[in-house]
Structures are given as structure tokens and as C-alpha cells.
Amino acid sequence: MSKRVATLVLAGSLLAGCATGPGANPRDPLEPFNRGVDSFNTALDDAVLKPVATAYRDVLPQPVRSGVGNFFGNIGDAWSVVNALLQGRAQAAAESFMRVSVNTVLGLGGLLDIASEAGLERHSLDFGLTLGRWGVPAGPYVVLPFLGPSSVRDSAGLLVDAEGGVLEIFDHVPTRNSLYVLDKIDTRAGLLRATDMLGGVALDKYSFTRDVYLQRRDRLVSDLRGEEEADDYDNENYDDADVDAGAGAQETVTDK
Image (cartoon, rainbow, N blue to C red; front, side, top):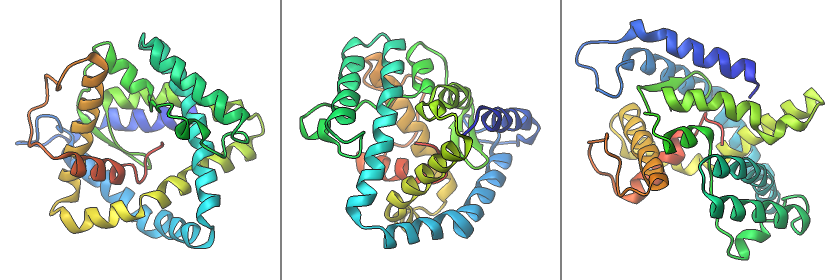
């Protein structure tokens, strides 16, 4: 995602404050607007992304898809090094750096995940988590066009993620855009089962996705701060299986 697109998405979401409604969830004051964007994203996914991802899964053999996922995971590890340093977590930065080094050199440029087999832990970090690590509140829940569930803090983090992402090193625009599309399709293909399950367990997929997203992000920030649970979140407790399933489903139209 380019910096320009990220800026437009964030600006459009923040300007939608007039869409608040009475009796809204305290963490979702933009619910009427968010539901409209969620419906748009769902329609786009049903019409385009899900069919393409299904064909991708059915046509390409598993080893090829694993290689694609490992490649983009290695790119994510490189950005995690930066965020771990910004969070003041030297061990996480060192482990992420070792993952990138091992997988790039021994894993054929990241196509093989040698680091995981060697027991090196993956730290999936983004700038929204970095802001949360230093006490920036999440702010209202926001559904971004094309990108999906977020918050005001995480939306601001996307601007930095878009600029700092390793794919930005590719100066050839068609190549960079092709990699963005491939990353999106590969991510969606990996979530086909999770989203099908979500449709079967959630009476209101919007509310379920929102609650799981907020709980998961709170839990991640809480872990970074060394707390047992987030101080500002008081909602129904889902077990880890529900959280992980919902977290996967909510990334249907969200960057890795």
C-alpha cells in the first residue's frame, strides 16, 4: 500500500466523525459509518478477493504457496526489527534480525523458513503496536476502506508501516505493485477457512470482528508493556481459539 493511499484512507476515516449515533459502543462511536465501510469491504471481498484467493489456493501447490508466505513473512520480520528497537526490546530485535539473516542467506531469500525450524521466535510487530507500547491510546475503532478493522492509533501507524515497509525498496513501480497484490492474495488464501468458520459462529460478524480485533490488539499491547491484561478494555472474554480465529478473519482485507 502506497503512502498516498494510506493517507487518503486515514483522512477519510477521521473525517467521518459526523457518523456517530446515539447508544453506540463506547469504543465504536463511528459504528454507523464503520458498518457501511464494512459492507463495502465485504462486497468487494465476495466479488473479487475471495474468488481470486480461492483460485490461487486451488491452482498453486502447497509448497509454492508456503514459499510465497515465507517470503513475505521474512519481509515482515525485517520491519519487526525496526519496531522492536523503537520499543526498546533488544532481545526481540536481535531475534528478528537473526530470523531475517538466516532465512535470507540459508532460506533462498526467505522462501524457506529455516529460522522457525531452528527455534527462533517470530515477533510480528507494527508501528501501531510501537505507539501502544509507549502509552498512546487506541482511540475509537475504525473500519478502513479496503484495509478493514483498525483504530485511530493503528491507522496512524499504517502511515509509517506503508513508508517503512521493505517493499518500498523496489523502485520499479509495476514490480512493487505486483508484490503488494500477491501478498494480499496469499494472505486472503490463508484465511479462507477462518472466514468460512466466522460466518458459521457469529450472529453479527461486524460486532464479533470488532470485539476480537480490539481484544487482540489490547492483549498484544498489554504483553509489550508487561501487563497481564489491558487496563482500558472491559468486554466479554473470548477464549484463545475464538480470538485467533477472529483475528485471522478480520485480516481478510487488511495488510499483513
